[in-house]
Image 1 (tube, each protein chain N blue to C red):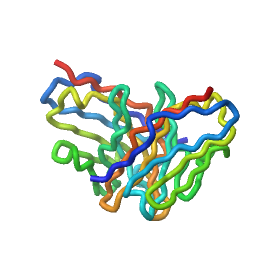
Image 2 (spheres, chains in turn red, purple; image 1 turned 90 degrees about the vertical axis):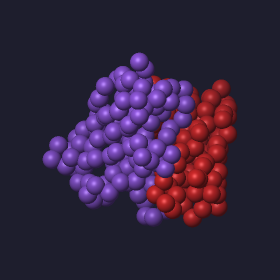
Image 3 (tube, chains in turn brown, purple; image 1 turned 180 degrees about the vertical axis):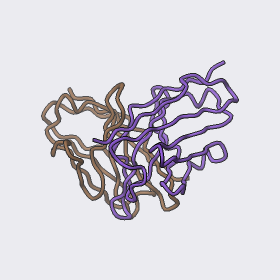
Image 4 (cartoon, rainbow over the protein chains, first blue to last red; image 1 turned 30 degrees about the vertical axis):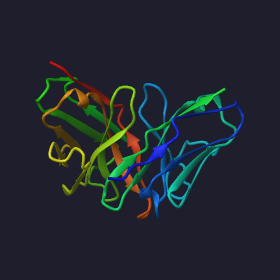
Length: 107
Length: 123
């Protein structure tokens, strides 16, 4: 079965830029989707499609996908961006796959 | 304003069946543009997709859970349901229901989530 891989954790200084990545064969020809999850809360969709943000998501969040790698960039990270971030894709067999998550720490 | 609310027992005994219901308000579960899905998260761990259902009854289930999962939809009540049989401690998790959309054929996303329902499997 397909799987997605993510780095377990990354840190970023307040106001700086951080990019987190997600890799997997199921991303070929697709766009990665990204969710933010703060402790004790349900996941929140932040990026989907080519680089779409739902209403209310700040424009400091952006996404891209190339080949088997999806990336989420947070530009000028804020303290409230500290959270776990999960990537997601759907393979050609209708299976929805989540990455293991990346913990973003804002210093 | 779309809301999803999971409901069901918070404690299930090993080998029994876990049953949860998701009530949708603010949108029709018959909306042709969306599937409706279940995702779970064991304590301290990541997200795992369980399955998705369309209002017509078409379903997709996680291959790793196939045979144990039954998804159903009740359009008259705007609800969907999950049944997971033969549960073990490994099924202890917060269970979320969510609306699943697509952006063309190249992107799937869960855009609205319930608050989650913690289900513990223990005797």
